[in-house]
Length: 267
Image (cartoon, rainbow, N blue to C red):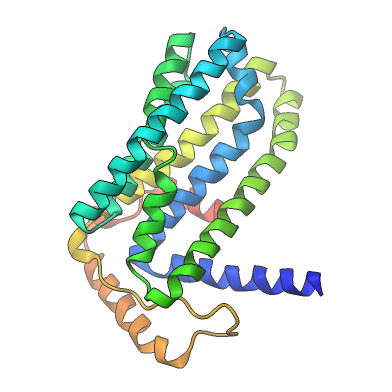
């Protein structure tokens, strides 16, 4: 019984994930969240050890984590105020993604504790704000009665990505060790994977961020349905047609690095 319920939930969440990816107005914000969560979880097991290898003391490791927490606590309400004031969350998603990418990149390239402090400060401006900003964007493009299902689906997806990311850490470092990488280099490579994913997603989102192209999309199907409801098909076709018209032109093409990254995550 429990296994059947789990498989049903997994199948329904998969349909919602496919729905997110099929809507042009939702695709890139959701993919940015997914790759950020996956990349952060992939290096999570070695983050503290990387700090120590750079030269941080145990007290400084605690200070670095505290910086991220305090800055996040202060900036999340500002993101919320900005979203309410502008009636749109896409700019907030882009800003949070940029801070995540830059902060992670500074930490991965850290040569001293000062770099770790600086990277954590920048990271704090976006780390905790990315998820609520993406949720706000998704909620503004779905029917009111579908919002609980969307929030639950995102929570499931991010939890699954965290589990997958941390599970892939042992085999990844085993490959690096077999290739002759030192322990410090293994840590640095793993820390550098996260900003790669974040930068790829943020660049793609920035290139495609056009407020004039934001059109309402049909709500996700009910989790128990085996296929999208018939009445949702016409709006979806109209949305795809409008998206094709709004995506013409070379400036809106997806960057190849993001296409490869998204394809790897989708696989």
